[in-house]
Length: 539
Image (tube, rainbow, N blue to C red; front, side, top):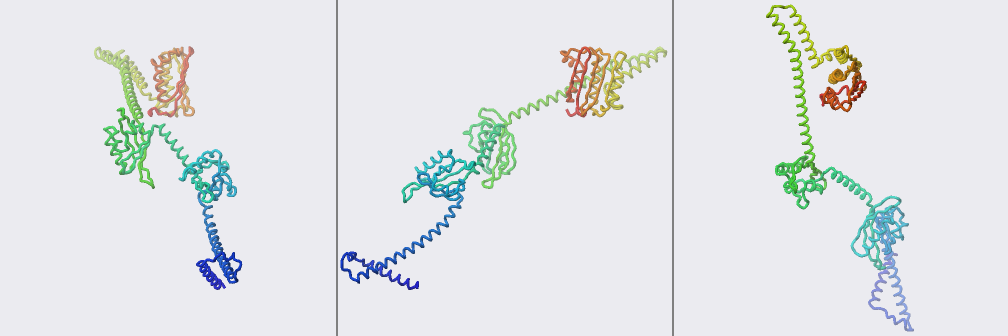
């Protein structure tokens, strides 16, 4: 059946071709007498045209179906595109939009169509959007802009690109736009800028500049602060290593050149100090540090910091000089103390022991010359006892062996008993916990007790002195009080300079302790506090 129909169509096409070769004269229709033969021919031609229209309709239907299929296929791509697409008319009304664009603006696609695009973004961005439309109207080149808007209370940064095209049918302008959400990129960029700004502020506040050097290249890149540190003008530096070395002090140029060469060839850490001569002729000391940065995209390079350490070097030199001077003063004070102690021992031996020995010698000479022993041996024994006492006193002053042999409490009590007289009594109240004090501190405390008791004997005109030593929570408390005449507090400095109180003050300073002094016409009380385990040798 289809084959027969096709054959008829082919026959009709043949007739149509023949009719086109000899067109029918329309004037026959006007004439009144139309023969049956002509009517038959005319009907045949009408049937041929009808068939021709049916065939054209079939072809159009097939083409329409194919276009619909293609449109459905590409409509999916259009809606699923990673960017938002919008088509606006000349008034800015949305004629077409894809699903990505609707999702970007958090609105349904149906609610977008035939709405002014301006109504979909924040009013604060309208001026930027109008300017963007105006630029598209005045040029055929693609334009772009970025707007910040708020959608559902959320801040969004949207990058827009578009071009204006004249519609071929209506002759009016249409705007073809693409929208991309760049909020995340903008936030990352903002964080990077904030971090970079904080870094620059930190570096500037610390007087630090940054530099980079490409490995295997003859280029050094300095930031703006480096020029200030080095004391050079940016236009005087061409970025080459040779020019940088010219700035370096002549005595350090070989060292800097070798350090840069090693860093470039061996990719090692770099930490150098060198001097530079700035444009005013001043010499500055510069510290440069750096290490290799690996870059997967580009070649690796060296990066680091530059600091002006001139002031730091000067302060370090001053500190070293002060330390040397301090050490010299300590040694001088030590030698002076040794000499004074030796002089004291020498004077004591000369004025006491030696005089006694001379007396013994004279008595022995008298016995030898006169041959009389009566009375002379009694004098000799008395002088020997006195020499022994003087020697023991001197030995006790130098090193109180009672501390080593019998302990701290026994040593203080023995001293109190030895120095007590009929007109001056000394009471010692030593807590048992005092034995836990370190040996070094015990000796220091013992010496301070000696100095305070000597002050009582020499200056206070007292009849009673009390010594109290206790410990609590690792703190030693020493209290020495008397019932003497006291002294004027305004003369305290002179007392410190002219008595044993100065030695006590120095010992307290060395032990990092604290001293309180109260005095009146009824007596004086000195309170000392220091750590029980402090090591003076660490000072």
